[in-house]
Amino acid sequence: MSENFESNDEKKEPSKPKYWKRFWIAVIITYVGTLITLLFFQTNIIQTLLLGLIFGIALGIAYYIRIRPSFKTNKIIYIIFGVTPIGFGLWLLYGLSGMSRFLISLGSWYIQLNILIMISIFVIGGLIGNWIGKKTNYRLPFSLK
Image: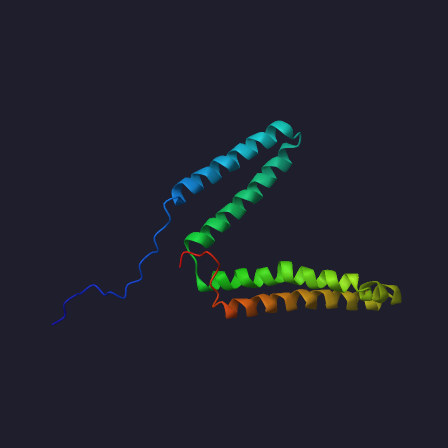
């Protein structure tokens, strides 16, 4: 007796909000409009196209993160969150403390030590971001799942 029954445990796709399609249409119109406006006001077309390409890639990544959330992607986002604002904030505090200038004034070996300290500060920021992710079970705020 092997009958195929549909399982209730199947993962259902989360429903998208009503404004979802209109939102992405508005984003694309704004993106194209901004590129056209930049082309009219900028003399350097290469810079405008490069900025448009970077913005388009960022837009695609944001769309991917929102539509296909996964544990690995969310973990990477939390680590990047830790490295960028948290690590940069710690690095800024280290620079403002005066310790960085003191090490640079001591000589060339201490400059390399200063660079290693700065890299370790960014690694600590990534670890803090990972810790925050663990506390939230790697669930992004306002995510569909």
